[in-house]
Length: 214
Image 1: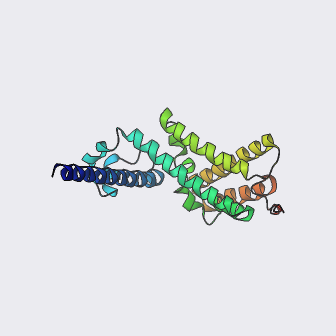
Image 2: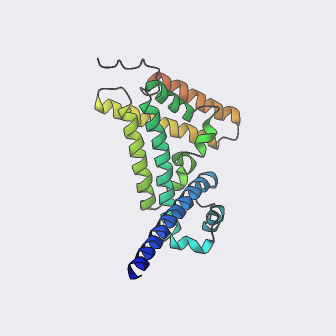
Image 3: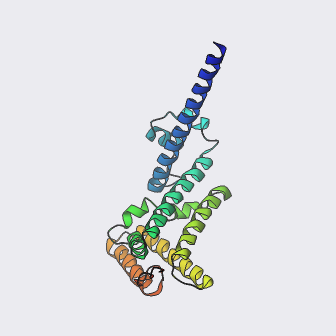
């Protein structure tokens, strides 16, 4: 009986850990969406917990502070952003180009305002604590590496410069488009950026696909 009891206790403990991990993930994903939609300062812990279907009092069973949740939510958002870029790159140059173009599309940029933390929370993240900024920086560095890898430029230094230029233009353009209260100006910002990057940026140019090795 004692052995059976201990095994039962271990099963309960394992189930409890799994459920706790699932709950924590739900809170992080809910927070990521809320922060990008309403801003960090404009989103309270109670609001997040309610949206996740949980009580406010349960928050501190999973997180030490709102700052810890912000850091994990940003990490989650950057991971989603980078996974999408990698998935597109794995399909070839055409798919990767289409993915980059969709980021600054005059028709689809609204989706990325809710998907890219660099755009949606940029000004707030600039004032965030070092832990949060480090998480976002690490995510950006991974995105930067994906851009360098898929630039098609053999010179490493030039590839890095091109990737940094492209990412800076993309994020800056979409951020400005978000700020403008005139949809015409917003569209012009995105259209001009897309056009110029197509002329000057290796990842954005419609270069021919690389020949496959024999």
